[in-house]
Each structure stands twice: as C-alpha cells, then as structure tokens.
Amino acid sequence: MPIYCDESGGVGRGVMTLAGIDIDEANAETLIARFRTVTGYHGEVKGSRIDLAERALIFELVKDADAKIIVGIAISALVPEKNADRGDHDMGVYAALLEDVVAAMLPELPGCDSIIIDDGRYGPETLAAIRADIAQLVGPCGTAQLEHSHRLAGLQIADVIANTFFNRALVTERQGRIAAIAAPLLESGQIKMRVLGGTPT
Image 1 (tube, rainbow, N blue to C red):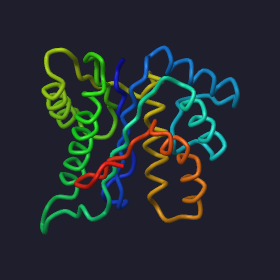
Image 2: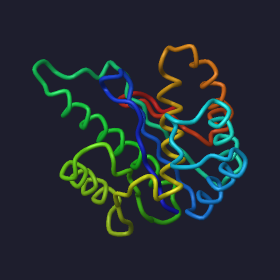
Image 3: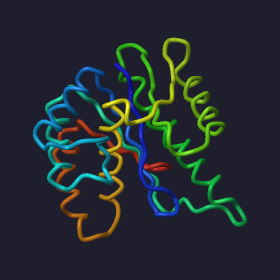
Image 4: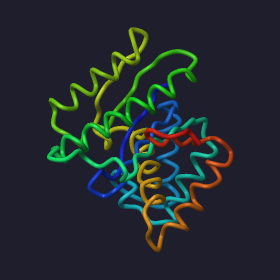
C-alpha cells in the first residue's frame, strides 16, 4: 500500500507537523466518498477548511479503515541559527520530518510500495531534491513521487490528520476539542506520534 504524506504549520507558527498514512488507494477513496455523502461537502477536503464535526467524522472513518498512521511533530524549540534564512530552516525541518516519518513506517510495510508526497509547499527544485532523498531512503523496491492533493484521497486524509495535530499543539480555545478528536486513535495505537529529536509516543 502507498504511504501518503502531507504537512501542516511551519516554523513561523511555532509548530510543524507531518502525517504519513499507510492506506490502500481504494480504501482512501471510499473513505472520502463516504465523508462527502454524509456531509454534502464539495471540493478538496482540507483540515484548514472543515469544522470540528467534519474533522471528527474523518477520524471516525479512519478508525474503521485499514490504515496505519505516524505523525511527526517539530516544536518551536527548533529555531533557526543566528543569521540563518527562515525559509531554508522551514524547508530543513520539513525534510527532516518527512524522512523521520517515512523511515519509521517502512519497516512496518510487508513490501515496499510508493511514497506519495503533497506537491504544494515549496518550489519544484526543492521538492525534486526532497523526493530524490526519499526515493533513496525507500530503495529500489519502491518509489517516491509528488502529487497534488486535490487529485488523491489519501493526501487529503493526510492533510486533515497533519492539520489536526498542528492545532492540537497550539494553545487556543479549540485545543481541548481537537485533542479529544485525536485521542481514540492515539490510545488504540492506530496513530503514533514522533517528536523530531525526541522520543516516539
């Protein structure tokens, strides 16, 4: 099965998250189709656009799907060095999260397949270099590719999960409710968290 990867936040916000979800393409499409049927939602499903009830439904559908998820988190302690370019630092944190999540997921796969990365955050040259790094990590038995999230249900699910954990880390009036939505999948182990430079949970 492919691993779909998408990120949320950024070093300028104090938190960046990246979700990797191992789910069959057909299961991902069925999940998003079910979400649309229940909610009447149109357009690309994104964590930044859906409300709390819709987010809770996505997590409920994921719970019932054959999916394994790892979420990498980088906290604001990862500050750029003095005189360092913030954009380069953001890209470096993103690349480190992506490599950490993919490396943690690969041993769990029965056989290598494809790593599908959202093609939307950085410029084409930067993304091409990151894709090449992931392809090297995967090795000859798999592939790494960039895709636009509006085309793939798996990337849309990854977006919602990454955005949920981004908002779970922010101190806002929604933090408690967001945490409650994610809690069942964390408690069951279907979602595992990894703090960049820290201990997996």
